[in-house]
Length: 271
Image (tube, rainbow, N blue to C red):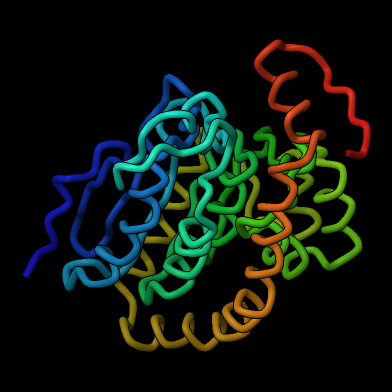
């Protein structure tokens, strides 16, 4: 029985003979994530995992970006659960952030990311949680939590060390510096870096190969590898998200969000 995806507003969903394409769909805001979209990113993986018509998943972004991360302005209004979310880039409830990480890791169908442009903050984590990544060589990637006075608690502290090692991961996570798609491929952060017009075709080619392959061999191979990632996530994410929550109440975070709104450089004081 086919799954009903009609309730999704900010994720465009297209199915084609075993392959489902999920497109983050707020192109006017570089696909930045607001509370309703965050909720959709929590639930879409559960729906897809239960869809018998889907053997592989392609994740990409509409327009010129993959995902610019959390929409700082958008997190000040009511979410889909009827609760008012705090002003700032993340929901108050750490369970919501954890749910995205674990639901992505639990999906049996392989996920191929077509990183068609900038992937920043939570957007970068979404890309790196995918199983295979194809990136625009000129795209900019970064986990910028630290630049707004926050700990990288929504997947960055899990995936960066696994992909590039602890030393490189700490450099990028502690500075929030950007890296190009080309450099990301060189250090193993992504699988492929290609000219922009080749990204979606290559990602679709890989996703189609997986969709048409031996279903259970592919799924269970993914799950076997993901056991290691899930064990790390279970060990890491409570602490990372707790630290992130604590930093939400620091003066440095308040200064960073004020500076963002006022379009100026923040002045951090370590408070």
